[in-house]
Length: 70
Image (cartoon, rainbow, N blue to C red; front, top):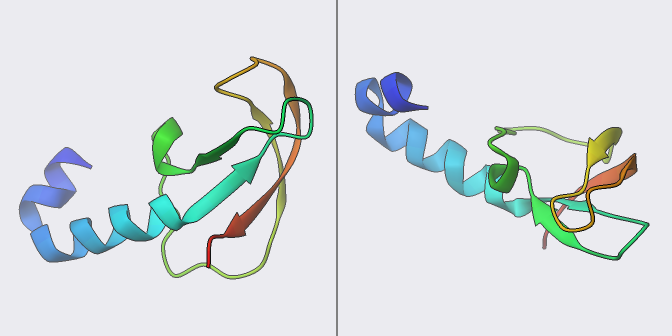
């Protein structure tokens, strides 16, 4: 988000904050990690999609549900 954040500092900050609220849950080891933890961005999104993702704790790739922390 380097260039984008420098051009739109407030919007970039909001995007980063909201991306931290979106959590992947690993069914293999039970770890929870945010979209921002893996360098992703999820902003003004809805729904709880399933994505194939590699866990940052156990290293296993599996289908994980993405949900917004409340």
